[in-house]
Length: 223
Image 1 (cartoon, rainbow, N blue to C red):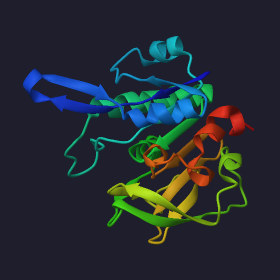
Image 2: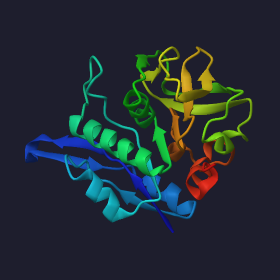
Image 3: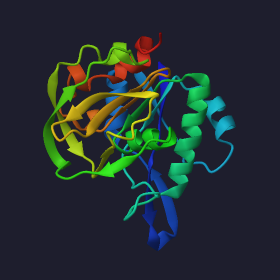
């Protein structure tokens, strides 16, 4: 089985003086159902290169949870997680490892590549439609998303979106909500895909546009 690393949210347990790493169990269920082995990743402050090399991963998922420490009004920030995920993205870029950024993970990916995020209204705990974008230039994940329908429905749990005017040239906007906000983006040269919806929260796990995990990590994103 291919090993897929999953970043974890930081949870503060004040009465014990602990900052714990945690992961929604549904991610493990989703990956195993697609034939992958989930590997939870600790939010290390250093030796990230050696840590990643020892795990010999085939891909990485930047999961949701925690506010980004750099955003105004962050209430659930985890600076150590921000640092770890930036280091992780740098190393994955060097090795051309496939990366899926989900919700917060897509925002981290955008900021890492010098893009920006913006507050968005009415995107928390609801479902809404998105429309697929078509470009003359293909992204490195084009074959992962080419079977998405022109319009489809997604779940939504984010208060920040990928700023339409600050998605960097190395990324293409792949899907937008009706308010114009970017809901998915793909890197032009690297197998990196960011989405703002949560495939692990669908019950049952569904095929089609939400079932992109297998396509990305099975090698379909490679040129």
